[in-house]
Image (cartoon, rainbow, N blue to C red; front, side, top):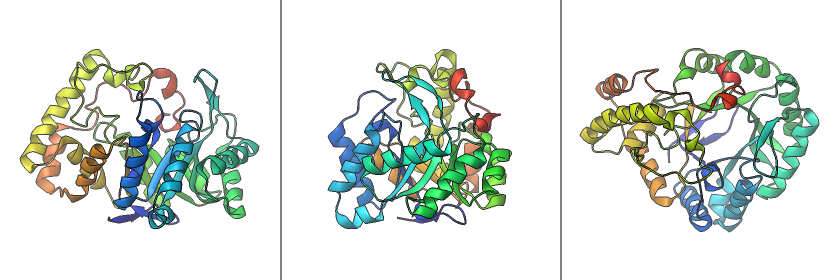
Length: 334
């Protein structure tokens, strides 16, 4: 497994990370046994970074990871790094009602995450979305206090714009920014990625397959389960979906010429964007994990990259990344 470092102050991690959200929430039912087996397989393959959020199915995902870590062989377990997002407020019906970045709340969230994960520290800790009522300086300052106390190793951020990134970095070292980045979501390239590089902050890229949309496995007639986030995602609706799947077919031709899958070439493209970027793959099954790992062996030359750019130019996607109400919470889009 190749390694990368999250910024100038963050930890060394595997070149790919495992995003665990889908094992608990937002994509319909998941198989608990297969989810744990997938985490074990990822650790066995050398993946060290496990990403979650304390609000994924109201703690279920953290407990799932905790169980997987407890039952994993000692060497793999000891190398695992936990990346945790916090701050999203939920109700008993699973609804969402804002974010809480107050210092006391930060420390409260961390205490519960440590218990659910069964670890004595969290490797990277970050608020999922900026709390508009709390200065980012106060939120990251509270995480910095957790670092000083030994409960957290590194301070991260999620979905923030360049200005917020600079404000936070002026308070405490920031290891990485977790943000959506893929062939279909390239908004960070204009201002956010240059700012992160200027500040020595790495990027953990989620949504590298755009929730399966550009995986090569999604079809227009696919029936989504109740509660599947994609049923509300603008990119998966009507004409937007057809337009985006047409882009995927253009990408498929390039992938076939190289003898790789669409998913592999899409992940390899994100890997090619810089050694400071660690893609998170959201595999819920071992076969999907195996496919994603194959991206590490895909080498994209100048001609390959030019062909991909022609097939999938910036701004080519139809539809926003989230429904309008959720877009409003993205500091990165303001």
